[in-house]
Image 1 (cartoon, rainbow, N blue to C red):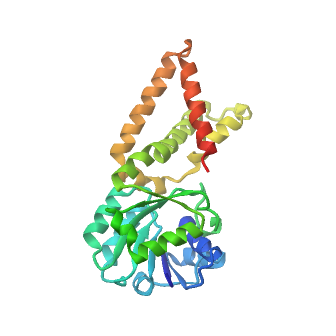
Image 2: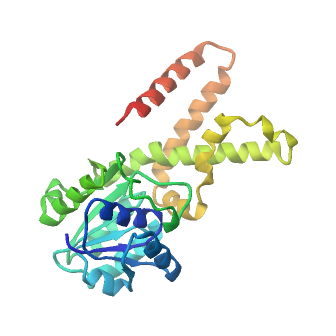
Image 3: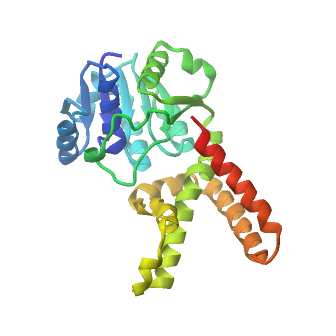
Length: 281
């Protein structure tokens, strides 16, 4: 891999550029984004320059799509005549089925390999970029078949993911979307619902000083932007609906058993899961 095009130079795209630099990548990194986002990414040291899509991808061995899901889908529709035949296109979309299905139909000139780095922040933009953002974090890859991981371009890409410290996990697109509905999308909606509920009940109350660190921890994800989450919710609706239904059922069970010992089991199960999550390397 000698050259990279990052399409979407926000938090994830710029963090990827910084991570590559810190891992020793010395080839050109070109960004495709708005003028302001390009300027911010250059200032952060994440890219060398900005260029239009056609110019950037024509020279790239790796094309990294790190936009919102809707924009990733739109970019995929235009990529095929622009890319090099030996290039690899990957993405950072938080849902995979629609992206992978569209790429399968529209990209034939080079390889597409779906991806999703399980990393991020509540704040967006290149100014928040961090070259260590992916270190120790899962980076999901969603090939249609195992053979897609054995191509020279895919092996090279995987080696760079390892160098930036990511933990690669391979699964198909459908399984990815089912799992992240539980591990990522449900936590976001639960945090947003909690924050909205407390806001509605408290209003302009002067008693906000009674909010402890528990509420702060639980509502951290509520700082997320709807503009980012809109496409996620729209492209993984069925799995998210199932996750919400199970969660609502669990909340109803807890509400019905506030005065019984049955909640002890839920506390123990929840504590075990929370402990296991914090022990995961």
